[in-house]
Image (cartoon, rainbow, N blue to C red; front, top):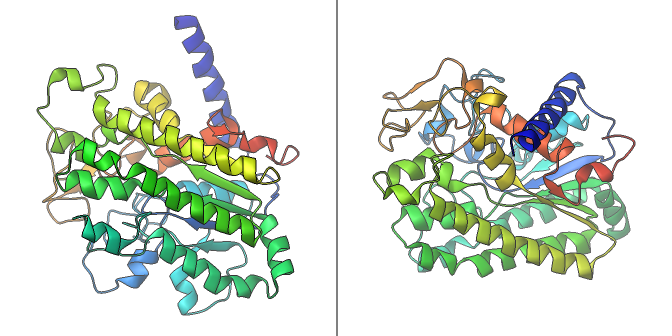
Length: 376
């Protein structure tokens, strides 16, 4: 086991060096269109709520790269930013900027909104779950997409041709459907009932995009939420057997995510059989991140996984009354040493690692690198 692990470690280290040393590859996509939640939001919620005092609208958010809060829930760039940079495209602008000016959107549009759910907000409210921060579900984001599409193409044949050269990032979306319910006090058994509904909504959106002409879709699974400081704090004091001794993560939460991801992959396989000409790529965020949690120090994450870089204290440096961006919270000196940024989201360094795993590692199915052999 030691020998195979060392080989795997050096292979991933080599891939990381390749990613760092090569600024970007020639682009085989003309644009990127992104749907999702706070893992991909590059400013939509901030634009839509200019007068709200949401904690991630304030420093130290954005401290590492942009040196100011941009609406990204991190200290810097996200996976969507790194993918755009690697492909030689401009950073994908948030959709709501188009309400002021439609110029400079040639590189695509980001519809993701922090807090967004896959399921309709009204339905979730009826189920007893609510997120007062946003009701911009996947369905609403799809509506935005159809509204702005004529800017890029004016007839259906042109749109089909245009979208066939675009990369569609479908998520991560659906995590908040589970987060809002779990953190609201529902049992894992109750939340598991949402899984087929969430997957159906994602599947419907994928099929609609394909009908409009999309030919390449990257669909991430959910991340190991059992390793998030917010959950580790919420369930602190659980029985010792509930934790993975090698990572400190909560097993039962991660098993739920594994179940969801399996169901999502089954749905993607079904859609592939209906549309064999379309590239539907599953992005394995879960196993990429778990590999990191198993050996954080070997990749420079020496801050103490799964502790957050920015927070208001506690075992995992997460405090719901003193969240990152609030006056009572503070950030670590070097976010690149941490996987978790604020207890819920990840650092720029972690997002960069995930992107590298997707583009050059074995964490996409089929491998995304096979689509642009001469460029990626």
